Amino acid sequence: MLNVQQAFYNLPVRDLDRAKNFFAHVGFELYPQYTSELAACLNIRDTTFVMLVTEDFFKSGLPGKRIVDNHQNVESIIALALDSREEVDRRTELAIAAGATPVSEPSDSGFIYSRNFQDLDGHVWVFNHLDFASAAGADEQGE
Image (cartoon, rainbow, N blue to C red; front, top):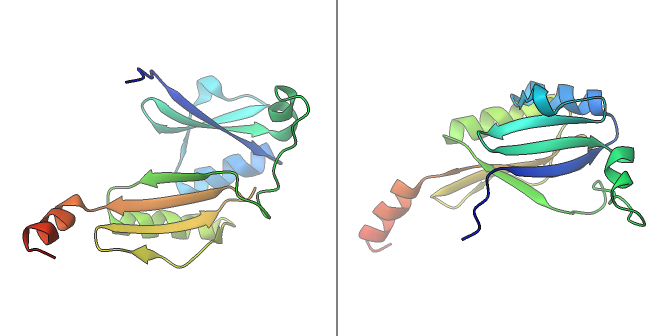
């Protein structure tokens, strides 16, 4: 197994202040030690972070590469498991109120409930709740 100490996911953003305000509205915490005028660090969990990086700074380390237009294409999907269905709904509604666009209708497969949206820069996020107790109960009942 790979022994990862920390994980940083880097996302290019057009307007860093706007992106920081958006994610603060949704409830993400900024990690000030890794935040500057070029990037802002969202603290997802103790050792998991999302770096919001200005497009110019993002491109500076990738000569010859173009940034994907996420409003037209999908480069990745960031999925975060939350504590409850209610928290999934609450955080998604906060994102929509802050300017996010829903990608599809909520999905409920019984033990996985999820909602997704595009942030202001078009990155796709999924908030989901995994109810393994429900899934185990269904398996025990032969469903």
